Image (cartoon, rainbow, N blue to C red; front, side):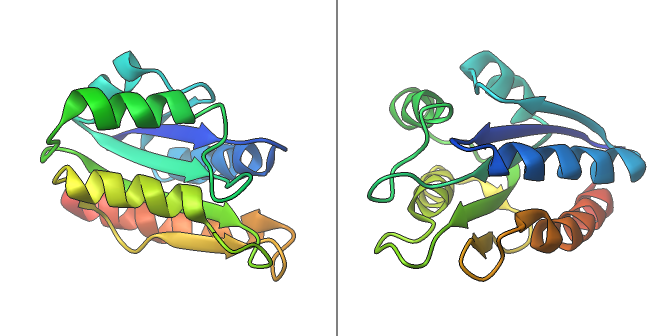
Length: 152
């Protein structure tokens, strides 16, 4: 099966919980998965040849969490086009803020701008409606894993 790198941005741990659940689901489907809590460019460069799943919450005024913002800016400033990259994206946010899921949307826009191919739709999870994000993310990850399998 496919190799998947999960890169996450988290502040309070919800993205980490979603990533751990995603890792379990994808492993059960036969994929080889590694979670990166602190995204580093070397790991990104390896997994852009395979599959990447970005899972990030949003902080402040639509900002990226500190655990993933260095990776985002390095990708933006140093990588340029990434047409070989195939990815999925799960964005966690709170719709009571103006920039709902701003970090996830920014990451998706960057990767699209760089020519990457998103597999499936981006999943946006609203903390107001879904205080347990894994309830929404698990079925999405199951479907995403099947889409990756079809491509692989």
